[in-house]
Length: 419
Length: 171
Image (cartoon, rainbow over all chains, first blue to last red; front, side, top):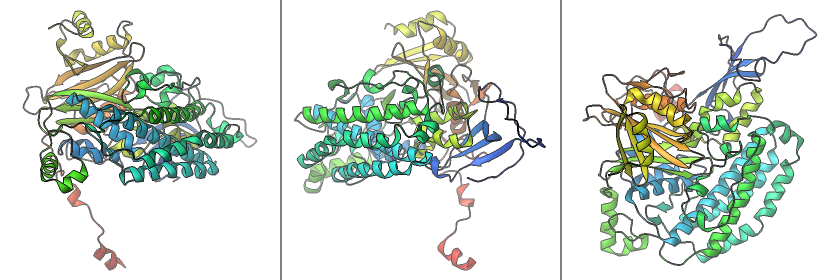
């Protein structure tokens, strides 16, 4: 943390309940008080990327927090306008690099909505399985890093062990651990092999046991409770008004999950529940994520049990990519691949918005098409960015140390926030 | 063609402001006049029959050939009624400003700042009208406009790069 202290006039921010609490009477006479401005970041380890927050402080209490974004801005939306629809898939990996699969999923769903394309059943199941595995990875990553940031280092090692197993699963599935690009417009790149299915079953068999183990480290840990209970509280009304989504919204007791209410993939064919919190504090959001991990494991298990046979890709030569082995051996498929990657495919003119429940919140793509092979405008509704909009509201009145908790409670990733 | 019930209600409530409505792929988009954006949004948010309490995103699209060049796009969702609506308003290049809806949805603050940053549309009565993703001193213009080249306008070429050779020299 840099202590670039500088006097700065600050307007009073008395509307928040935390501000204006009288300072305890000190033994020494108070000589002088002054407001302090503190730059937190952009290199602070808890920011999970490069994020700066300018804090106006009264003692250790935050009276105003101004997030400074854009350190990781790469102009992804501008780049999208210059490439074909297929070419944008790898760019979506780099949005939320912790959860690349879900970004791919959200994007290909949006393009399929634009094309009005129906994906085969097996592909829907495969997508759901891998998306939920990705959610487990995302939540494990969150749990480990949040605990690490708050001061419980052990959990980090345990959750990363499990995460590693699943990343190896991704590695065998598509050859990459983080930037996966496995989803395709019209299906997925390749099928789950029997060995991978077996691996997943093995993982799920003792996953809930492992989860209980992590919880034993935190659930009744007094430091964890003290640092998460009643920290970063946001009411349901405010959470909706700020446009928060995912566990951050559900922690406040709002039952809003797109997987349930605008079902896609195979989510409507399996049994699961939406965990909803009560108090809207960091602890509730933690608990929701733990419950979601359990629900995700349930979803994956049921999907694997029900996995239907059939193709895993739409066979529409104008739009979907040919299989890789055929590209290498068959001239027609090679020409098709070449054509799709150089010219792309034309989409009907129009505009759609398609929201997907990623593990951080609602990840949406708003695509305007003018009928050509490239998106005319592509807007990404990134949950991390919108959550940062509520940062000032949620941080006011708390201590400097709680800033770290609040970063963590959103589960922000700056690649997605700055795009 | 019959209108979507929500579009019909907007037309009945704001006959002067209503411009057009379109339903495509299950998405309803209603275009209104930009002067009426505040009353329309306020009504969508407050009216119990509409109840669009959740703001999804705010975006803008650039159509350089059109008379009114920019299109503001707002997407709202009703948590209780589980419905979506898209409200659009055209903004001209000469009078490149629209009223801010931050007073209705607080989440619009950052979203509108992003629109300003990327496309240069100004928001009247915005509480914190600054760039958000690009640096404050950035003066090349508005990156997401269609007349902005993909590689930028040369600002980055003025940066001092530390190459391998220059590094050795300083040693």
